Image (cartoon, rainbow, N blue to C red):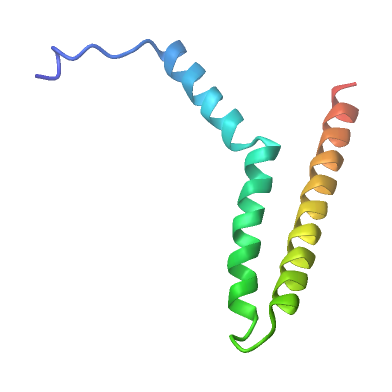
Length: 86
C-alpha cells in the first residue's frame, strides 16, 4: 500500500515547516504564552487566602518582567545577527 500513496515534494514540506516555525516564533505568540504561564505561575505562588489586589499585582509584575526580558533578548539577538551578517 505504501507505493500507492504519493508523497509531497520536499520543497512543499519545507515551505510548510518554515511557515509553522515562523508562526511559533512570532512575538505575539510568545507574549500570549507568557500571559498564560504568568497566570499559572501566579496561581502557584499565591496562597488561596491572599487578596485579589496582591494576586493582580503579582501577576502584572511577573508578566511585565518576563515580557521585558523576552523583548530585550529578542532585540539583542537581532543586533548580534545583524552585526555578524556585515
